[in-house]
Image (cartoon, rainbow, N blue to C red; front, side, top):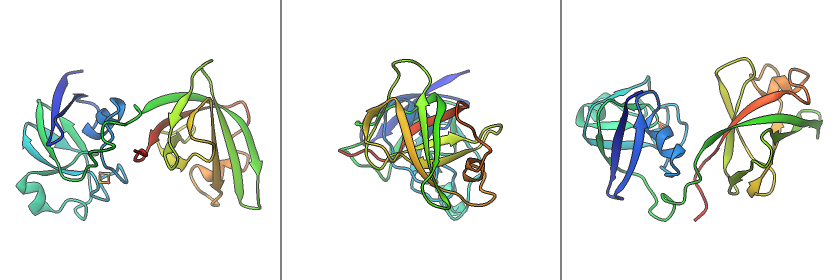
Amino acid sequence: MPTHRVHFQPVDIDIDVNEDETVLNAAFRQGVSLTHGCREGQCSACKSFLLDGDIEMEKYSTFALPEYESEEGYVLLCRCHAYSDLEVELINYDEDIIRLGIPIESYRTIVEAIEPLTRDIKRLVLKLAEPGKKMRFNAGQYTSLRIPGSEEYRAYSMANTPRSSDRLEFIIKVFPGGLFSGLLEGGITVGQEMEAKGPYGLQAP
Ligand code: FES
């Protein structure tokens, strides 16, 4: 898979991007904490200006990036694939945290517990499957949990103590028919494997 170099101005940070990943995901993977929100081209939090290079964008909402802005050169980094080296000017960024990013990784986990806390709220505990493996994260960050049997993910904030852990705990409200939360009523069982990707969300300075 061809790889390209992306240089972010004015922070003077370089990352490598494969053509099959978005620029935002490549930055996450390399511990560069870019400002983001929905990661689905809906909110415009990742909007930046393309100074140079060839890109293609996945589908996005024109509320997040109106046509006239796209014609001027604005892009959504969460939808953007690089097909050459890029020069990108960041619009929203925090100089104090951009370099403090914890690289985002995909973790294999095992469901350790699913407990009812109230009639419609469950506590889900996942243990990282690889011995000795831990996920570092900060308060307020979240993880994307893959819906078993699908390519879709749902995001939940960690409810356990931050920093570094071989366990991830979540407090999840169950919505009837919810693609992930609905499975907590018997569709997911203790001992089952599950993929967790993270940590996402801005990091504490
Ligand atoms: S993060 Fe929301 S549009 Fe990119």
